[in-house]
Image 1 (cartoon, rainbow, N blue to C red):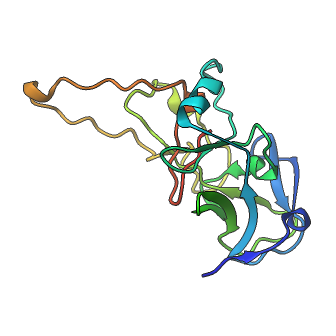
Image 2: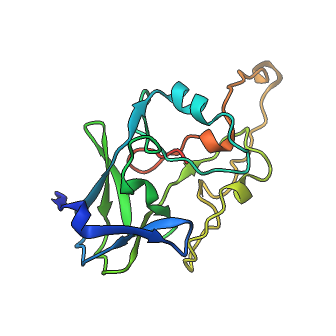
Length: 191
């Protein structure tokens, strides 16, 4: 389905959210398939994004980073717009879509005036996650089917036993949780 395009200034407003901090709310009826807003900000490399957030407190998972591809991250903390205030939800009404290296937020169903708009961040788990990672990335969406975390998959992957010859692993360095990568159905978000 081709997305309808609308002027986001007429569709949304940012205000205090019951989910977390500020959120994005519909100002009018938004039909399913509407392209609501482009996620914009400074385009930087993954290395630069990690550098910018490497000194964040390990308990602070809040950033405005969105992965476009293997080379590019959008840092909406610099020259960003209202798209950076969409909160995570386990049963979202929007989704992120990447087209031609641009990121858009589109409605997955009809959205009524006053309704908060959300999408599922699906932040990827990593083998090196600390034991309290689910607390750091706790979900506050309140949906009946809430999985309790913004992380995906919901459970830590079970480690396979390796043969002694294959036991040597290459250690990959990664920043603190505040700079972690997130994968989505279409694209990725770093939070």
